[in-house]
Length: 360
Image (cartoon, one colour):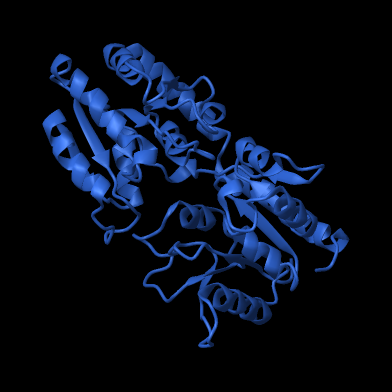
């Protein structure tokens, strides 16, 4: 492409080292040198991958939604991109399709997003932009109730070459991610509290906070969880940079992903598999398809299910080793080299699609 590809991040994502969320990390991993990545506000040290430019909201008496739209249009006119990629904002993607080819990448349930909640909105959106989801589960949700619409799958990816080398596994059961009820972290605390007396040589660790970044706030959920976790003997580290999380995964015997929320992909599970840890995940959303036979599955709120699966893993070193090996093999299917090839294919498809799609 002679012109760059412009990626517009969701407003809450920061393309900054030490503050990045899952989407920013993914964009950085896949970005070409010529790509332009636009986000809200000026930042310190940007993530590698592409060139970061801040969106400047105009000072006009309009809602923030319209000011953001105009800022994105101004960025498109400045960069003159061959394609604009929008993450998780169907309403913004539909608006910007008036000004050039657009590809929409969905990381979460589209039926909960502004501009895609109704069947009519989703059908209209699919006529004007190439809609891509990070899993079959996401595209399936987009297509629910719709007539024939085109969607594509572009799975999230992992760069296996930069993962820390696994050493001697410690007897640690690790939860890593956002510490919110949807992620089932309280179910993990409950399960550990029931098991800890039987496993005196093991430790349980929660690594994360309500949000990504060192300035993550204290929340009512965290305030309630802390004394329960302390009583159960679970260590809570708070937010840690992504590299620290990967190091912890490379040393942990078990990583738990006990989500109640229907995970649209399951990046934590993929990273844990790539680091060679034995994974225990929930049978919801895209998680079963992601892990295949390389993990144990247990529903977090089914009586005794999480406790039984954890006991099985802690009792059986051979099982943990086998799942770790299978996990690494599974993670290799999602390596960044293959993802970049798929990304380029879909970028070309989005440009061709825009030439066939109706105007406005």
